[in-house]
Image 1 (tube, rainbow, N blue to C red):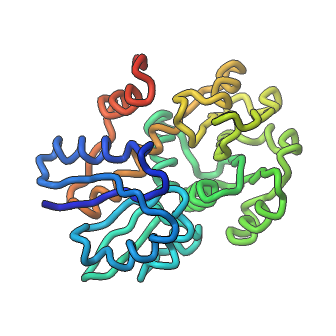
Image 2 (cartoon, rainbow, N blue to C red; image 1 turned 30 degrees about the vertical axis):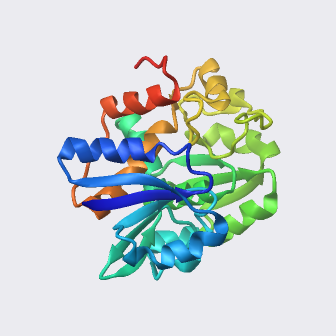
Length: 279
C-alpha cells in the first residue's frame, strides 16, 4: 500500500484526507492518506526520518510551512523563492519539496472564471504571509504585469517586494484607493473577518468595475470579505477551489496519477464545511 499524510499542529481540522482518499477510491489505487499531528519540536525528526517511515511523502500545513524548509534535502525553485513548502516527496531515498499553493490559486481562478488571462493584467494582494508569496510568485510566472502588495506592516511587504523585484509594489492597506482603479484581480490572503479577527474595510467603490475578487480562506465558504465584494456587484472566487487544486500535484507525485478537480468533489468538501451547502 502506498501511504502519504498531512502534517500540522493542530491537524484535526484538515480536509486533505477527504480529498486524497476520494481520488484514491476514484482511481482504484491501493493507497492511504491520513493526518499526522506533529508538534514543532518533533518536526525535524519526522522529516529527516520520512524515507524510513514507509511514507512516499506528505503535505505540510500550519505552522510548519516555513520551518520545514530547513529539514528538506532538496528544495525546488518555487520553495526557495517563497521560503515556504506544502508538499514533500521522495526521490531515490531523499526528500524533495515544493509549494503548490500558487498553482492551486491560479488554477482555481481559471476553473471558476474560464477565459481569464493573467498576462498583462494588474493584481492587488492583501497580506504579506506565506500564501501571498506563493500567489505572487505564480502570478508573475503567468505574466501578470504588476502586483500591488498591501499590508498593515510595510516592512513585511517591502521585504517580499525586494525578493520579486520592481513588478511588485508595496503599499499600506490604507492606500488601496491609489491602486484599485487599475486592479482587475483582488486577492485576500489575510485572516481578517475570520475567527473574530477585525474585518477589512475595503473601498470596493474604487475597484476596477471588471475586477474579480478572490479569497484564500474557505471557512466559511463565503467569507466576510467576499460577502462585501458580492454586495458591491463583483464576481467572487472562494478559497475551497484553491485547496482542491493545490492537492493535484502532490497526489500525482506520490501516487503516480494526476486526478481531476470536479464539481462533485467540491460539493462533498463544501458539505463537510457546511452541511446545508447547495451547489
